[in-house]
Length: 240
Image (cartoon, rainbow, N blue to C red):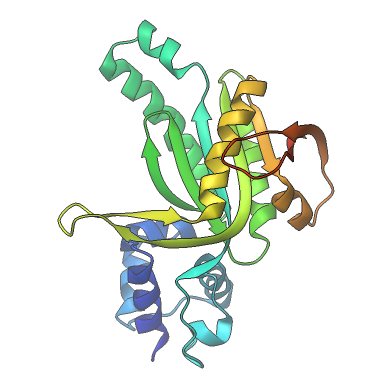
């Protein structure tokens, strides 16, 4: 299989449009279209980024084997806007949507810059994931940048790593891409608890902390008890 066909196959497998892939790689949709038609080819730097994005080996991307995975390791990035309900009282529905869109626009650009894949927006929440090489480190960098730039907004981000399933879910006429798995469920459970303990900031699970390669400073929030989880756990707040 030629690389253009393989890129198209992977893109469709993950439920991505050409525009989604182009945004993730910081190239034009026309460039992606030319790759898939074998009219042009990504350079070696972009080939590595594509392999990282889809969590496949270079050999697989180049058609040297037929590795296929529906479930893969990733870092889930779940976020919410604290005091969103109070903000809704102050603004009209349209004004609230516009205010939220400005925040999500910026957050998405940052996530794309670090090779993340946006999944969906849910009212006050933004869900995405990072896969491939150094996915935990790249997720933390994105969360850190969002936190630093939005000092005036009560944005809570929580990161958790583990296996996820990424695919298209729902009625054929209305289906959208989504992620599933214990790692996703745990991300939301821990984010809700974390948002009750902090006004804003970045939280990570033990799984993310153990995967990070860089040196960082964290504040431990010990003995978190969540009914859906079988035991008490520790989570950590990222310190600037």
